[in-house]
Image (cartoon, rainbow, N blue to C red):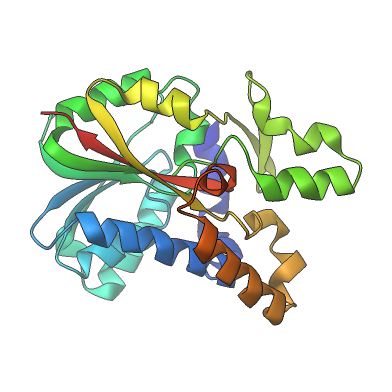
Length: 262
């Protein structure tokens, strides 16, 4: 089960991903969009909070965060980090399965977000769309950051290594098995069009920004980790292309900014 897999990697997640130069760069891009929409005094729902990096960043800016995750160990890590950062009073934590999002209290929130591919662990997102429609206030924002269906870096890299099956794995409608630590989790890669249709008509897609157009997926970070000049050059290219069609549709992840329809 996915919760068991993420429980197993929770204690090492920050070391293996959060603290890497690539992850920090990508997260800062997401923070820029969160900061543009969520202000001090807002109450925001976070899906798949992981180890709480985004929740803590928002809480430090006065945003109250209802942080949820399927992994209780991830939530425990978040709780410890929030206490160390002095923002425990602004972060409320609870277990939530994106595939079956049920809650006893339908508290209205000023927005919601999901970062770094948590949505890809659920095949059917219709229940989640209905759940969020009942929670998010009209004209508030929903920021989703799923792994994208088309990733230029992944396709080119694996074709150059004569691995066509891996190069186009994201196109499989039945999903693929992904490694999470020593376990595997089944993931799906819905297109932007599919996500727009899934969350309509309650939500309207306002903007799509590529996250990692010219930068590699995290599992390929060793390719650039020891090449700082290449990393800087790719970063500059990424800044020029991430908001431009069609490049924004070819990134590893994509930032989708929805608005709750009144």
